[in-house]
Image 1 (cartoon, rainbow, N blue to C red):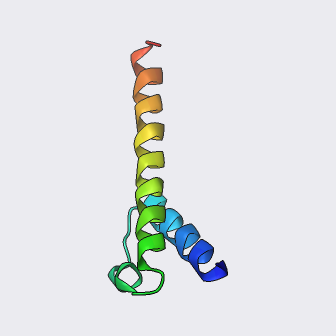
Image 2: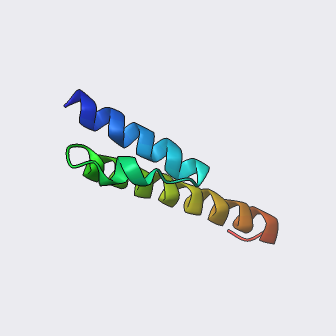
Length: 60
């Protein structure tokens, strides 16, 4: 379980940074956890950028 959580965390960090580790994503044991974390990180960035656009537009 710990390996899965670490892979998820690493994927989320990589997703927020905009870089993907293909080797980690392809790992048969923890690749799925890494990929889910990566996607969650990318979604977080998307939401932050949407919030910034909203603030700059001056709309709610």
